[in-house]
Image (tube, rainbow, N blue to C red):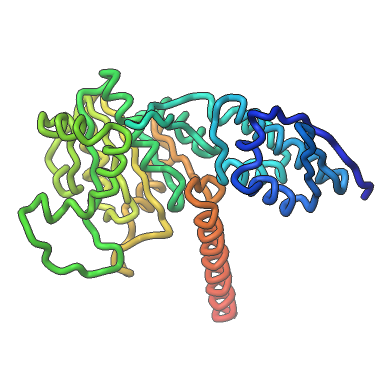
Length: 332
């Protein structure tokens, strides 16, 4: 391949944001595309093989566009822009963060950070029931909470109901002290954390006292009809088929439901089928229900989390293939 050098003008006020602390963003781009990046005054020069110089240029221009829109560029932005460049979709970065769902109590905007998250938000806007399926760190629950709180504040619904099955994550914790609420609170802590960050502890407690926001284990849903409510079922992979059916049949008029789960992190007994797995087969052809599948590319936590999720996916795929080969040999 022929070598090439290209130049980009980076205004001084954007250099620190685009380059990152100790030039970490540019170092990532150099490693990803095997190019050399040198800054002289406001002129950034990229040298290397032509195809990779073009990709690096597009990534840097997208980061500059983010900076010009007032965004603080994170490692996740850089990693995602690089991954899109290998699929020749770098220009789609501009589509992602246009819509702000809401702001946290600290003023931080909550919005999509990946194309998968953008599709997830769009599905929530256009369907009565949405299943958000994906690995840890993809923002399934957080974005669902943000949409619920936004709908509640704008009076689209009268209340928010947040629920999840009370199952230990692979540990037997024994009998917990305190009253019933104290016993179930540890299982619901992730939902409280998101509420505190987006709504603020004071506003949350005030609305909870009025009964307008309810955080409860899934068992509390039996026998109820939930009208004019925004309902989020978290950790749905840990429901039984009977629990999932019970939950989905609670939905009343004027309600919106989001079901989130990660099928790779089930805490059910080995011989027990997940209610989420069954539901995905049962509801796949029902109009008004959308299934949105997020992947490791949509992980927005530390970049290392994305690598861990991908490594586990590869490991699980190898195990699956080995089992299939063993079964084929036995049939022969």
